[in-house]
Length: 131
Image 1 (cartoon, rainbow, N blue to C red):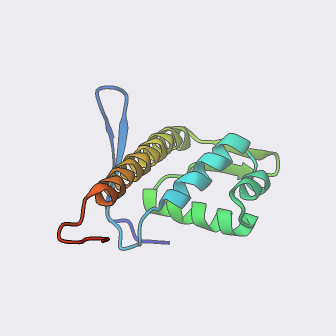
Image 2 (cartoon, rainbow, N blue to C red; image 1 turned 45 degrees about the vertical axis):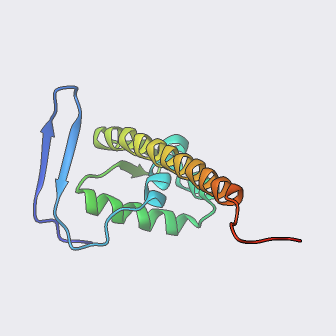
């Protein structure tokens, strides 16, 4: 588990929470956010792993790393099932926002790529004759 030097929860005007961390770990990935959301939606690690096309142990390990990086436990795990913690609810909400932004960025990038390709295809080559 990464060493976290500082963790500070700060309440923001619109009831937003920010987690500030300093760590030497690799950080978080989009995949980690997808796992977090899947478990929150399913409330079951086995089902979430199936939806994410990974093993349950892979999903559990990645979520433990994410929780360590964030400095907050997102889920209470017990024999009766899984429950999202208050910190987990807030983090899942932000993860959903991040994934939505990420998908918007991918769509924008794809649009500009298509526009660029169309411009390149439409540019006449001067000095070239087919005759």
